[in-house]
Image 1 (tube, rainbow, N blue to C red):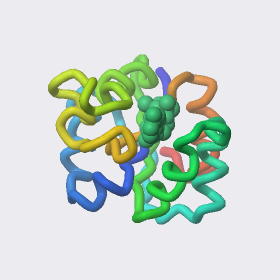
Image 2: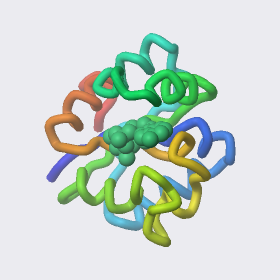
Image 3: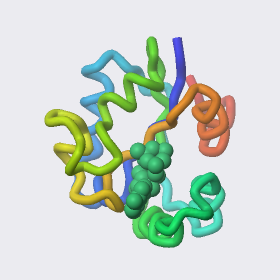
Length: 137
Ligand code: ADP
Ligand code: MG
């Protein structure tokens, strides 16, 4: 059993497809063991994406992530980290396989509908960023 962090980004929240995206996770056998809708501050978004701080797209990414509310979730299941990444599709929706979340709900590489932890190690760090122990059940 693994846990991973998923975020439904502001573009998908604005499109009103939270339920449709959650259905992808549940239909694939992942369980939502924690969930919250929040509007990140600039400081929080910068801290969350700190690994990308030297990339040319960092400022735009932070601006986008604070442009509206997001839904953060802990997904639990067998092989949850990779399963979530497969369900998400490639970072650039134009390269994402048909039937993936990004192919179906995202417009561009900047506004690409979802975030998912890329390793078990980062999943732990990202889950702790959003949730306290008592919020996960
Ligand atoms: P992923 O979200 O697939 O793990 P990365 O961790 O590489 O992708 O990048 C984090 C986020 O930064 C992406 O989801 C995307 O929103 C944004 N991003 C990545 N690469 C670019 C790029 N070349 N131009 C604009 N935004 C980008
Ligand atoms: Mg990433």
